[in-house]
Length: 544
Image (cartoon, rainbow, N blue to C red; front, top):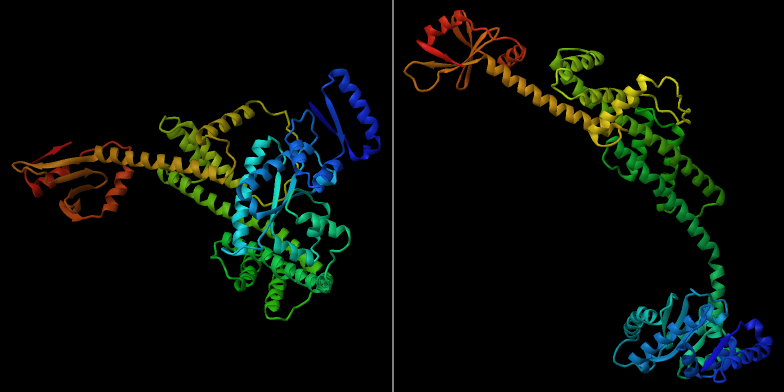
């Protein structure tokens, strides 16, 4: 049984002593144990000597202790085997590189792999098509190799055509030089190792054209910096202030404006009309948008750092103010919303209870409807909540301050009552009450209940005051009669009022108003009216 121990490279000078001690320990255990001691460089030298089968055997060995190198080597070897088995004739080199060969690896280090594909004799398909086809298959093997190896190391694979790789070397691409210098082949058909030797000998050098190309990038520095500064000034800042401004105008209720209209609307709506935005902020957005338009027309081609700093600071200041303005607008929207909710509910109750004023309505609602069992007590709590929300929303907008500590005093019966009301509101909505939306939900439920109650009262009132006129000898009723302040006769498509012994045309609104007025009063039959109706209809009887 062969046992391989890999020691850190900085222990190379002690390797003889380590080997002697390891052999001594092995002999004490079993004479059939053969001990090998290497450093990572020794392993990579086997690859550089084209002894790939030995390295493959090491990678496939059983790890008793591994701090990363064997696991990384194993997943790369398995992936290499899968790739070569599929299309060996196209693969010229399979190279491992990165932290693994530099000696800086750890247990979960990524494994960097380069695969070079020979495209020099491709005839049946374009080179790029060959590269993409092979690369998709190579990538599909990564997950399979990782699962077989049973390691957490991520396999990073890059695929190059031989022709494009050599072009990059001639152009002195730094990645390619590093790749040749540090890379170690796990498989090579006489391509990579000669390149590595030539690089060590100094025979691979950047061409004059490559040097000129790299030097020219310095010549472009000023233009590149200017372009990026202009991008910040005319794109990032422009859209950074324009889009939120359009959003606030939409929140106000306007249609999404064009960039050209935005500044004008910001000035007219928020500065001049609503008096919410100071002039300096209107000037800021106007300067930024004007600068952008002038840039589009070629007026601005360069911006100084000082100018850009001012523009950035102005934009940040403008956005801070816009966030405050949003809170102000949202508060106004809430005020309008709660005002509508409040008027709908209390307006309906004022008409129903014939009372004016918030407190009078709440008191009458409690005494006439809640205490009489016609509405649940939580509706009374809901009315109070709607009134409180309206008061809270209409308070001036101020900055939040730290809340004072709860005062334990004065929490007796009043505190219990507040808790009970809060509990009732929670039951009403199914959650803790916090905002206008909750008030709106409560108002909808109360309103629906009030409409249903009013309709029920109307039907009851109508039923108590309604009699059917049935003339002797006629199958169909002659009409309906209502004894109210006036006596009304309702016939098909006609409503009449009895006055001075005669029927006069009357409106449905008059009948409705008198029905509402009498919905809780006793009905009294007007016998004088019956005498007049007998003259009009002849003998008849009243059916209730």
